[in-house]
Amino acid sequence: MESQIELKCEAVKGKNEAQVIRFVGDLDATNVQTVLERICNLFTEGKIHIVADFAKLRYVNSTGLGILLHLSKSAKEKAGSFKIANVNENVFEIVEIIGATSLLEIFDTVEEAIASLK
Amino acid sequence: MNDTPNIKVEDIPSMPEVCLIRLSGELDINSVAAMDRCFTLHADNSKKHAIADLGNVTLIASAALGKLLGIKRRFVEKGGDLVLAAMSMELKMKFMIMGANKIFKVYNDLRSAMNAYAWDVKHETERVRISFPPELAIVPAVRNFVSRVMVNKGYSDRDSFRIETIVDEICNNAVQYGSPDKKDNITLRLKVDWGKIELDAENVSDADKKANLRKHMDNLKNNIHVQGDATRGRGLALVKMLASELTAKITDTGTMVHVTKLKEE
Image: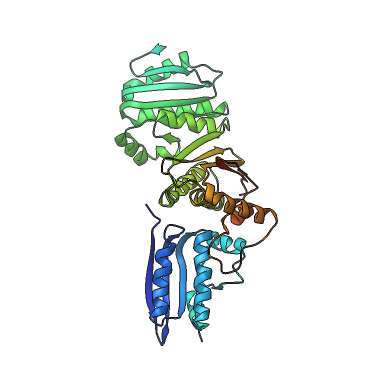
């Protein structure tokens, strides 16, 4: 009965170390481990720049946000980055209340997030 | 009780201001005069609201629909309404084709129509109690259900989302810090009003984890924040920010978290 979350990965043209991940569904305590493992595997494969597209992420709770902060820190430790784009109003409010807007790199669009990659 | 072949007008004992109109059989052009006569004769003029139970209606002709519209108008003129309940799927489809669903409020059954009246007109409080075993996997279904209740009760999408988040966080905490015994159910009680919702989450304590929960509550009181990259420990802080009021009572046997959330939008 865990929440449904689907991660769709796409390569970024001309940037071998980057990957766009489109989140579809709800990110919560029931599926954070799956998400963590998927993205850590990408780090291991050398995809150290992640652009998370939240256009279809309906919901995130404090545990989900905790994992996003952890991934952001892990990416930085590997000289990479973890950027977020297309955050809906409701999810953004949760990010803001938790005080994570200054800890996460948030962009209006995926294109802007990709353009900011070094 | 007042009988004609197709219409009965009754009182609802628990709702003295509402009149129940039970219709049955084929409501065709021949029924219109009887409907009108019966309703005029027996309907209590002091009642401002009516529910038409169409559970036993097999056909409704446009003339009968016109008559219902006339009866509805009488209630609307008194500041009330006539709503419809318990239509068969076939009848509902016909209603939609005739565009009548845009004129009448339609409810699946009599109970739903009565509940809607209690909520919409009387502004009565709705109470919901959910009891579930302490498993994380069940929490999404609980929070989604509560969110749907809130939308159904006229709360905005934003408010419903906030309440969904509150429910998620307090239920996750109850699972995380409560007894893992599957028999020790978590109980969530909702008291939904027009302007606010009150939530109570109650769970059996786990002796080993109780101290941790107390520490979290103390940190919350003293405004001590979780470190930036920590993966856990922000749930109660989030609830505190989203809620209008948050209190927690931790005893030797159990924990009770009470949240009040005012309707904002």
